[in-house]
Length: 439
Image (cartoon, rainbow, N blue to C red):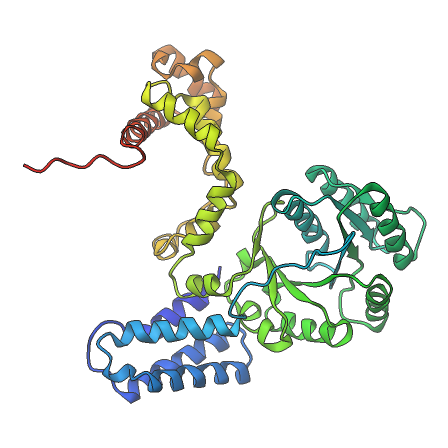
């Protein structure tokens, strides 16, 4: 995420890092390089210039030149200005109403239908709401089928009317159905076009006028860069939406849309899509995004994701088994499942400060656990529960069944045993690694 932008801004700030001779000339040169980095990230020139002018004014106002740590102060100023540019703070979705109506708008291919299902899953799981999805794209049967499939996947009903070509009428009927069935939120997926056209604008404007939604969200593909910003402006001028959703942010190496869409339309970015899974949806936090752009990671979001998957009762069970040396492959497999629910491995690694640099040219795949899962899957139930029983013949059978070599299996078994020993020490220490006794 934002690899190109991050590396170029970091390079621009490198000359001011640490102590040294700092002058108004090299501060100006640094600001100029930051501006180039923003332009390369597909940020428009007027916005890039205004941003860097503010950074320079702040740097001069805070006496960066005479500061003890000029580089650190400059990074702090850039971080503050990036945060302001993206909206300063997160803005929650408005789901007050009985039911609350959320209208989803955007171009075809922007990810509206997938986001609608992700939002339903988010509101159901994290907000405890009863949700109904509405298939309002009457022009593409595939969109209706996709929404039905996703609805089944997340356990959320999808309202459709076969043969009805009036999206306003469909949505109104769906709201009545939701009231009757006690649904607290109705999410209306709408039709998109390949480009902004008058017919589409008339339709989405009519839907907003007739439904009076509590929340209208504009979904845009972040990888389209400045085009995304221009499209957002066209939609906002017509329907005055409440917030923006950036999809495919995990594949965006430039970051132009994330940086400038808030500034251009003066509407907050509320959510970002970071993968294909239904759980791959994050609330947008400008300060955390600024951290990631400047290579500082996002530990807060990483901890939040871990807490969402954290099962206190399961943790106590695992701790007890570790203390009694009963931790086995079934427990290990369960914990792998919890890690996988947290999101893509590449995104998780990117949240750890400094790891984006260490893994810059390393391919991080979500399939990383597959060989381990295959090995454990090739074991019998008895073998999974009793790791110490694995002798030569059992290992040979497991290696053959999982498609790996004996060497691969032995390497995994050693790693498993080392992990088990470390986890046992941590558990006995009340969650802390044991301190080495002073001599």
